[in-house]
Length: 71
Image 1 (cartoon, helix red, strand yellow):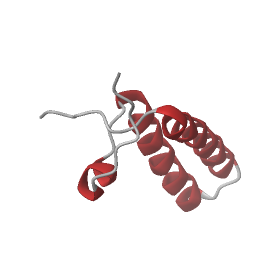
Image 2 (cartoon, rainbow, N blue to C red):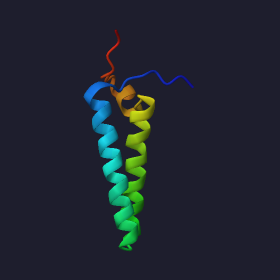
Image 3 (cartoon, rainbow, N blue to C red):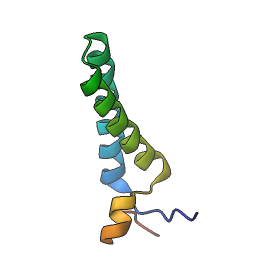
């Protein structure tokens, strides 16, 4: 499967920061016993971190959005 880069610049940074923040929320939710919220935040955070690491977003690909600069 070819994952053509379509996430870059500030979009990539925002996804990384947002993903890390959601993982922190997930840890806090699990510690306080709110497992449903923790699971949802963990999945969303992992997805955002995956997007930032691979520079690919399936939703961006479907919508034709490309924030990756090609020089």
